[in-house]
Picture 1: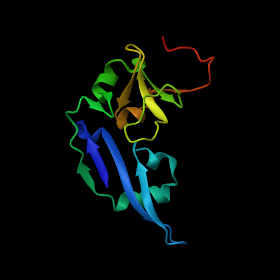
Picture 2: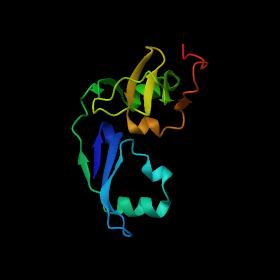
Picture 3: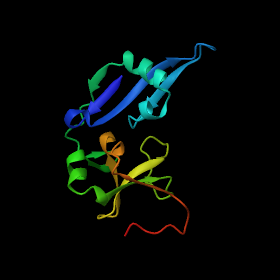
Picture 4: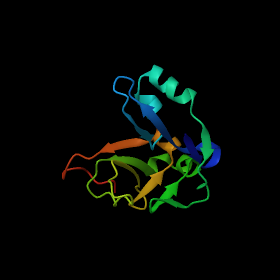
Amino acid sequence: MRLESGDDGEDASNIYAITDPATEHKGLLIDAFDVFHEICPRDLSERLEAHRETAPAGDQDAPSKHGLRKVYKSEFHSDPERYVLREGFPDFPPCPFGQSFSILGFDTAEQEYVWLVTSIIRDPRLIRVPYQGEDVISDE
């Protein structure tokens, strides 16, 4: 199932019910950032997409997601250097589901974490900033 929101499905997540043919174990594969097709083998990606249904997620008008301000592609286009994707930073806000975030958008002008729609995460202009410890240069 593909859940889309935003203009032209610019924010999407995918949920797959899968079975391991060797063991018959069943499970869920959750692609929260709509990037699985870019990182998995092409034949697997094509098989998953072949039977995937699409449904609107209904949060197109939501100004936030998971307590973070939601940034759409149009805002990103107006100033793409303003936003970065932080990876593994220890100061991420808490996840509302009791887990933890591994990546989050960051607005360097406002100095706050934001939710970037998935089409921004796939944009080659988005700068990825992995956490490297205490000696990392600030985004300021």
